[in-house]
Length: 140
Image (tube, rainbow, N blue to C red):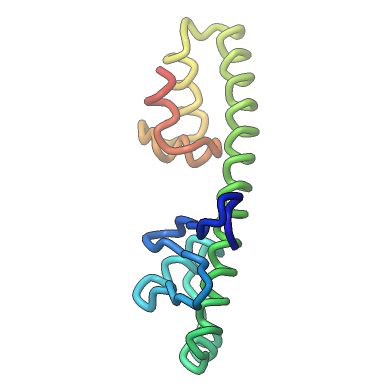
């Protein structure tokens, strides 16, 4: 694949840069394929994946790597959409809590902390609410 100027495209995937050129370049990484799989699917690959991986040619491994990069990109897009939806729901909820008597945003968040029994663990509260880690730090 090439861009409009005829230059090779580069796609950042994990810690490797995949380049498509006239000659075949293998950019899969034996050391990080398990990490890429986990990021794409949420768990480590099973035995059948490893059997298939070790029996594959370099070209087949590259095709699998490229596919995992595509799945990872789709998963990241899905997660971003989910985070945006959860943020909108949370902000609406914080507004309602403040209308019900919380003095300010910080108090509303403390009430959520109590309701979810996260005992002051703000990262756990963010996880429970489906918002990205660091969201409350960035919004206070």
